[in-house]
Amino acid sequence: MRVSIGRAVVAIALALALIAPATASGNPAPGAVLDPSFGDGGVLRLPAEDAFTAYGASARAGRLLVGGGHGVQVLDRRGHLDRGFGGDGSLNLPSAAGSRFAPRAVAVDPRGRLLVVGDSVFPESENPSPPLGNGLPVFTPEVVRILRFLPDGKLDPTFGQGGVVETDLGLPPPVGTKGETLGPHPSIQATGIAVSPEGQIVVTGAAVVGLGEACEHDIFSAVGSSAAWVARFTGSGAADPGFGSDGLVGGHEMAENPLGATVVGEPVVGPDGGITYRSTGVDRCDRGSSHFGIARLTPAGQTDPGFGRDGAFVGFFTALASGPGGSLFALEQQFGGAKEPVKARVLRVAADGRLDRGFGHHGRATVRLGRSQTTTLDALAVDGRGRILVGGTIGARKGHSIALLRVSARGRWEQGFGPHGRVATPVRQLARSGPTDLFFDARGRVVVLSRYENQQTRHDGLVVARYLLQS
Figure 1 (cartoon, rainbow, N blue to C red):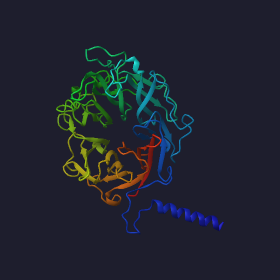
Figure 2 (cartoon, rainbow, N blue to C red):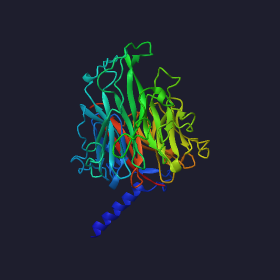
Figure 3 (cartoon, rainbow, N blue to C red):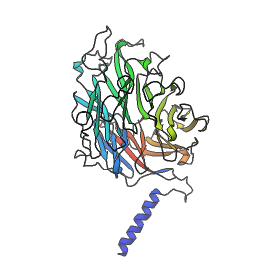
Figure 4 (cartoon, rainbow, N blue to C red):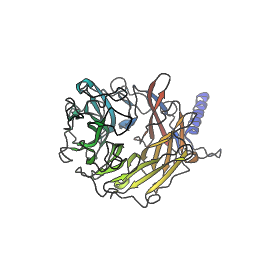
């Protein structure tokens, strides 16, 4: 009995040492530490076929939805694959009308139902597309596909057709250089999904409108012209007639949004139903009217003229997050390099669409990292006290690390949050340029998702890290 008690005391002491702030040694107290109860010491490496991005969401009972390749996997509270979903820890994604289904993003609605959005991809032979200079087609025929699962992982029969909505949004196929229609299918790609408190579903994306000539002098093959779109669906999966034109805004030409964006993503729905989105694609040939930035739509789907300047903030924004009182936070990265440190600004936009001058310096807070050409800050999350976590990847010659920084609710970079104002977690084979997803789980723990790349085997996968906040 004495031996068992002694071992238990040692185990408890070791666990406390893992999560307690390091103050006795004189080192700065960490702002966040890896959760030893999750994965392998707080980090999970998850093989994912053809992982090209990383996204996730917090579900009920401590579960996590994570994806980035051809599937969406469900993790239990300890980071193990939840075998209750599909028998292998994956959501059972039914066959698409096209040749395959490519998931792009996930969300959880207020009733705990799981949403997956992506593209139903058709054979390229069905839409004749001339090849690019590298032999790849200019566009791929595809339509939007949304799946909704009940909290137990079964398809929701009250949504669409047996839990599935597959739609072309009423958009036409691309048009060729001579005005001809190129095949029977449009080329529509979904990029993001969000759910309003009332259960309305917002999806963002891009549509290839047609083909044209390149503006670069050394490119002689055809190029695609795209237009961004935002769609809203009712809780049953029908197009929402109270939004835009039959539930759709954009998708026909760049001028339909104030940024002239070719692709938009990362929708954030405000408490009034307004939708803020981020421009993730621009037309390099039309720099005068096609910009990176963020913009907002009214609940009815019109450009909100009171947001920023003429409905938009222009800048290289890498992440969005909703804040208290209908406010919004946006992360704008300013790239450094070999001689300049990497900087990023966090903007707080008030509910009225103007910068909150009481936050930071005239509505902006700045964080800094060291000099690097492969450091990226591209994730935001806001905790229950209004503090903003900034996430990304720190690049170095010896390898890359997950980075976490924090800004106070009043807009000050908390330089006591970890050594040198950041928490860095080295991860073997961490992808050089992200992307990163960042959110809080149901118990307030920080979850970070990124990708790893194995250059030798060419097998990619997901990195999932969970942190405990120390203060």
